[in-house]
Length: 365
Image (cartoon, rainbow, N blue to C red; front, side):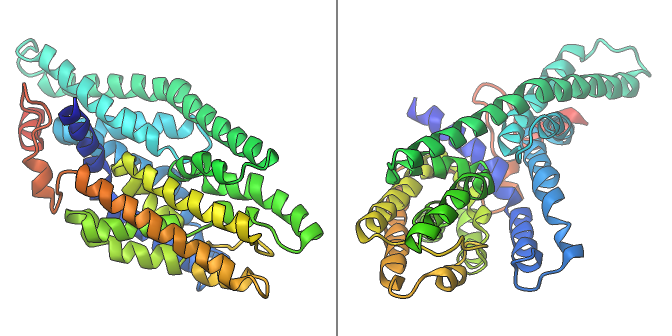
């Protein structure tokens, strides 16, 4: 059972980690050109939305299908993922991780069933139409099922955060906030729920802890440090650059793929977030406005006089706790080391039949 879970986790990692370059590119563009970025540029900032909405989920979908059945499977995975993208109003990374492998697997099975049954001279026609018909069916299926299901999950998490905030169980709210963030729902949680409540609290008390529940850079920094010191392969190599974008640029989304690649790392985010929130509750800490983007510089800019020790100590607590828990997890439950595309090509996912990229590419051809 444990071996199967490790293989499943490794499969998730192999969909995410090869695409980290695209995530970092998006993070750099976001950190630089959004209105609150380092060099705001309205024209270049137009890249941010389409990249996170379309490009990144489609890359994940393609990678998932490609792992199962080479380029042919990747094309099916990307096409199927597009249906999930259109079916929801949130970034559909989960949709790509579901529909990508499903598209590749179904295409592999259909090609296997049609092998040696196609009349000579009709192979290209049958291959193109079988792929096109399957892609159309999966895209429609994803739009009417996967998209709405993920959207409902989004609404559930938002309602959970709202309930815990209303009942003053602030540290417990992190149990909903961190998974929601990893699903790229951070802006919906922060600006849709926490920020409006925080503004009202500032009018009464002059500061609000609600501004820090989602924007705290400590848990994400701890996770990236854990991947840097205890991780392997591409995740380890890319972590230092991601740390700069996350902590100094304030683009938290840059660490989300690392957690998606190894979902058990959400535990380290909980450890850091909950302990920091407890500290802030005890110290009655708060900010005067939402730090946007959530960098350490933005935190310093909106920390009221006399609150710097409490606020910065909370960030440090979150970083240390997340790093220690994350490092322990990576040592106990490591994922397969991925250092290059060749590692993926040599990875046989199915013990009973060859579904490595090399074999799948040959079958697709």
